[in-house]
Amino acid sequence: MSQTDSEFADLLADTRHSAVHLEMRDSYGIGEEVAAFEAWRAGRRPSPEPGTWWNDFHTMVRDAAARGVTFRRARIVSEPVSDYIRYEHDCTYQNIAAGEQVRWLPRRSASDLALPGNDFWLFDQRVVMWNHFTGDGGSAGPEVDERAGAVKLCAAAFEAVWDRATPHEEYRV
Image 1: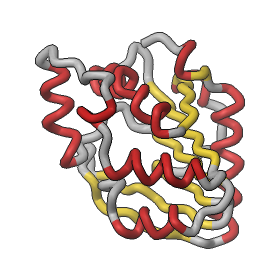
Image 2 (image 1 turned 60 degrees about the horizontal axis):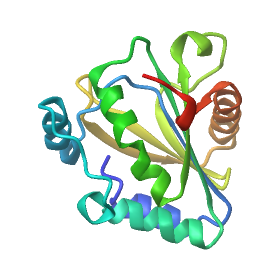
Image 3 (image 1 turned 90 degrees about the vertical axis):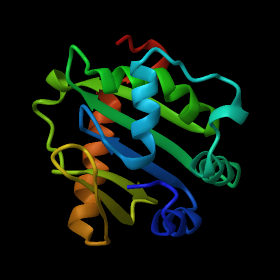
């Protein structure tokens, strides 16, 4: 899912308190990230200068954070980590600069947690945006879900992961 999709932007615009994101895959093949990942694999490292990597997603996060929305992102990862996770870790300063808090949880530490079957965003603990993916990590489209049971599952799962996870600045890949 492109995080600049209008559906995501609309949900974020209506968010007043919190947006949490749980990622559980070891690799993604999302359109706009493929070239950047391949360049990273070839040895190119992103410049920390905001003008070189800042995009619409970062602007949306920054603007929402400025109006009081708290952003937390947790990533469950297999260890040793995949090249893609190394790439994500290397670029996470971008999420942090935009206003997110990020934590990492080794998959072995998540074995006894009840987790949903898909990555998700949860906005104000009221609406879930499921992120569906193909087998090779491409986007299979988002799905908005306001069912109370889905919201409750995602809220509990995220908090359980967050409580066990390591803050980005302490996690070593």
